[in-house]
Image 1 (cartoon, rainbow, N blue to C red):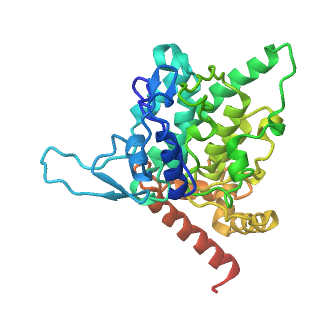
Image 2: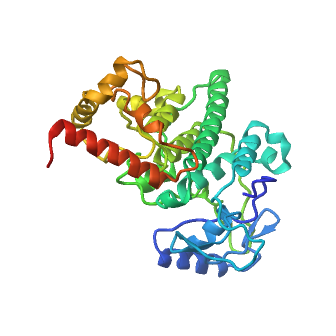
Image 3: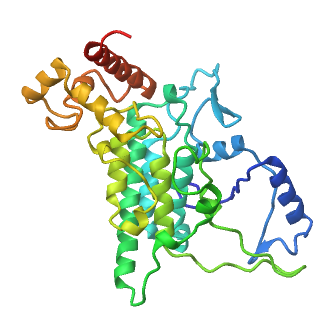
Length: 356
């Protein structure tokens, strides 16, 4: 989606293998132009790549070349080239939120109001979260704020739609979307790196008889399924902190939409910006280490002294978050913050448990 106007020129559909993609391109192109239509629009189908998709998703990332889905950075001899700054700007995120808040701002988003939410799903799925040295805490927080606002807007729309409906609204826990079918319920271990693009749960219209155009699908309203997919993409965003994931999860009021998403209540008091809990880590183990951190003499002194932040003085981790926050700036990269937090945690564990 072109973020300024809301217009979509291209649609990318992901496959599990290059062979599958080549087979589909061959089948579709064998029909000829007469059969490859959606309404009066001719479909031009070609084989693409992850790198081309990422170029389209992050068009303003300067001096970045994508290779096998990972960013590589190039030097420029142009004296007027300011070099790489960020993958996505605050202005681009603000425009996406505006399209959701005021769909009438653009003819395209007014006709297809689910488009901004699908664009956010693609952004969260394809952002290079693993490149922690190349985006700052400020950028991460801006993406979170945009996702949180859009989730809030969509949740209110779906809730009003459900409450005003005279008929019964089907429970989303009994719905099976293509993403659920392909990847199963939310789990960091079963979700591949890079969730499917938004188009994955918007199946292309069924092809008509040979020589006939493909029928146009009716406009899809903002549905609970779309809300569930946006929540899924938000919780799977690897760059978000545990406390941010908790804030996104608790924003959704419907138990049926939250069904299938597993997130621990301890995340509400998570004091770290970059350090996350390991996958499949038992809850009692996390609770044990939280108690060890809180029991550290210096952390305990911070609690008794009424230090602010870090989950509150009564938090499960004490005020370790407030201690770390003194040295953290938004212009720091997530890798730098992660290294700082790891040093603090390691030192606390050595003091409490002894050298290992």
